[in-house]
Length: 202
Image 1 (spheres, rainbow, N blue to C red):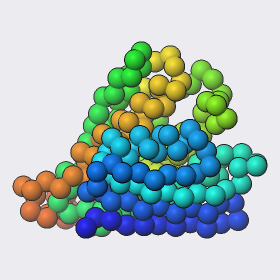
Image 2: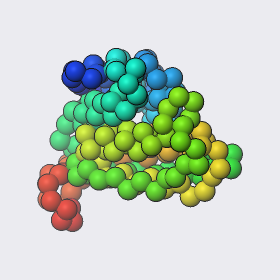
Image 3: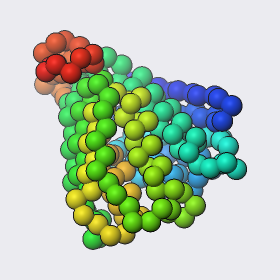
Image 4: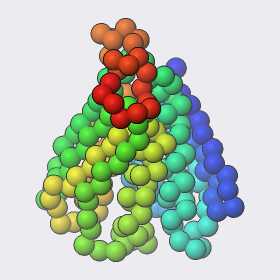
């Protein structure tokens, strides 16, 4: 059972998350930020990872702490659920069209965190949420899930579509990367025999 939970409690936020990597895309998300909830629901639905999230934060200040800490906690839960990552496909990629927008996402579940973010927005906010916070979420998630994550918006005009295509792209690429490959017979997908550590080939 590849399930795990994580929790983070600070003076700024209280966040808990539970994931099931072998789920059906069932979600129960409440962060206090409507747009973030919508994106996390998309992540769950399209990755088929069951996701439950509860977050309370200092939203009277801004959405930064809650957004970042949600990424941290969901990432930690995913990493714990992956365990030693034996038997996983490890790599995943997706190209997601959404009306006038197209975004490419590539994942290596290598336990070597890294984010390439080639996404720009034409507006500072989507609803009440600062668009600059989306990079913070993806950075926190990749760091704590142990993912090398490349996100490139190839083109697009509508900021909502751009963000949503990023989350859907992550979902589809992550779904591929964490799937169990029956041909690997439980082996760690690296010539080193372990994932993580240096950036040497493996």
